[in-house]
Amino acid sequence: MSSCTGSGTGALMLSSANAGSSSSSRASRSGSADGSWCSTTRRCTSTESSASSCDRTVTAAGLGSVPPVAAAQPSLPREVYVLSVVGGCVMLGLGLVLPVLPVYAATFGAGPTQIGALVALFALMRLATSPFCGRLGVRFGERRVLVAGLLLCAVSSALTAFAGSYGQLLVFRGLGGVGSVLFSVSALATLLAISPADQRGRASAVFEAGFLLGGICGPALGGLLALVALPAPFMAYAVLLLAAAVLTLAVLRTGRTAGAEPGRDVVGLSVLLRDRRYPVACLAALAQGWVLFGLRSALVPTVVVAWRHDVTWVGWAFTISAVVQALLIMPAGRVVDRAGRRPAMIAGTGVAAAAITALVFVDGYAWLVVLLSVYAAGSALLNAAPAALIGDVVAGRAGSGVAVFSMCTDVGAVVGPVVVGLIAERVSVPAAFGSGAVLLVVAFVASWTLTTVRPTRRS
Image (cartoon, rainbow, N blue to C red; front, side, top):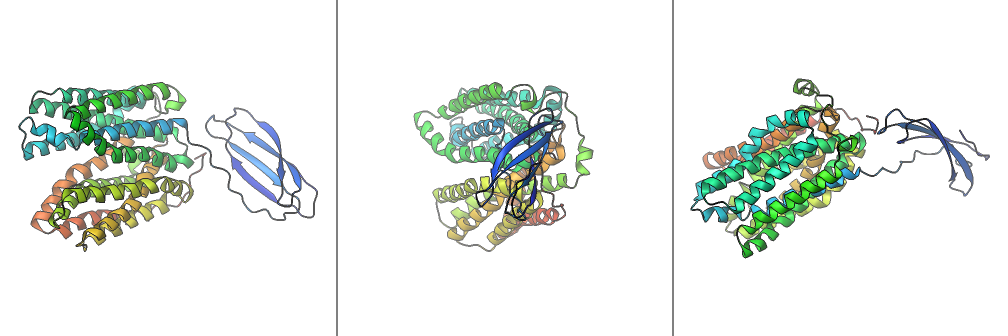
């Protein structure tokens, strides 16, 4: 405790984090608004290396009642940025190969149906492998599974570059889908395990920012590499994945910073489902997968072409919305941590639902771009808030919690395009857009059932 002589006194209790392992007392000098000085004493007690509480009492001269002062937010763990870079490498590589894949498959005599099967197989293999990711993480640790996924994707991409037939291309693409889900589930589980509760929103935003930037830059670079040779983007992707695997091994070492090693507590899916936050987050993930891959990727291009615009206009619409999302993803992460998960979920699903609902009535390109950008703003919140909710529920424990959450997005990505296409053909295009709006509205209503609890470092 400390005191300063003056005409008035006020007490302010602050909470901060301390990584020490024993009680300690530290003295410092602090200044009041009028230039007078006083000493402060902080008594810190810690029972964990990652979270502790420190009660500081400050008595300032001449200030009367001192208003609460927000403590500076601690920086994110270094591993969060590493995972973001790794994710950026993965998405950059995917962006390199996706525009080239149909053209490359056509050189083996593949028609539109076979090319469609090649694209769908990747998502199907992700979906089929997802249920096993939790068990693999429990058995071997997410860090090892993450690296294995990166290496499997690298081998798959390199083999694709040297494929001699469509059948080989199909097999190698399927292996890439397996490696992709091993990486994505393990990376997210590791991210949530190493991030304190009051930083999970920002951590998820940084992680998603890497994916967004990679996805924006990849297609243009892939087109340039394809001018050299069609297999070149696949080899470049393999090199990127190998570099990402080396970076992961170098930084995410075994131990506490890895955040996901064998021997952690295991939580069952039945326990997670009893927590309201978990199904709400999974519902939001399903809606996101449905809208992004069913409506945006599968339906919007056909609508734009029907308006007598060429495919280039589709690319511009997607690029503009992606840039909007990239600009808003970091502020969205701060909102998730400071305002709480519930307000962020309500705002994200509400804005996204409004944008997709409005698409039902749009018949011009300019309004399409505007509404896709509005949806991107809501999607920025939905990239951070549901993942942070999952991290709060799982709380660093191993199991299938993250895998099932990821699986919900994949279900939307696989089922969404098929169902949306059927609705567009047999009913109408506005009705197809309405299917996504319904899912988002349901997620919006479900988000209201959450309780408003702002996470703290100790939680």
